[in-house]
Amino acid sequence: MYRTTGTSRTARDDSDAPRSLVALVLIQTVADLTSETFVQAMGSLASFDPDRGSPISWLMGIARHIYAGHVAAGALGRRAIERLGGGLVLDEDATEELAARIDDQRAGRALLARLADLPELERTALEYVELVGLTPGEAADALGVSPGTLRVRLFRARARLRKDRTDGLR
Image (cartoon, rainbow, N blue to C red; front, side, top):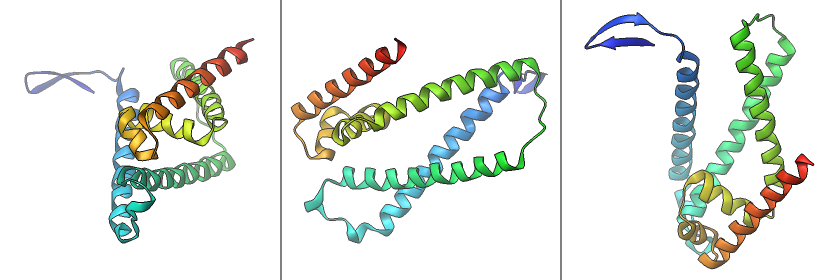
């Protein structure tokens, strides 16, 4: 990254470059997955049946399948890299950052495992509200349940996740 004064570059500052690169890659990945979801939705629009659910739930189902394929492809790529091995030498800062990222990923995997243990409706309600950003009313509509039912399911799911987290610390 270059620090700028007006329109000229005055000094190079790489301290935020890895973080910026990761953010750009994540933004691009989200954009690619979103585009692929809408292309798939447009291609299968004729198969949409409003009697089977709302347009939001249909679109979210397509998005979940697209994302699952993305995750599976990433796993195959990581396995190929593991087979190839590597002799990358990291400096101390990079090693500490890598260790922190590994710890974060471990915590993320533990959360995903706890999420997988939730009943389907509770897990999907959490995904729609917390990850997708739907309001509870929109999520309830997408899932075909009343807003009250959805709020109860969200409360139960969050309580289970908190309990599982504290039980795991003992």
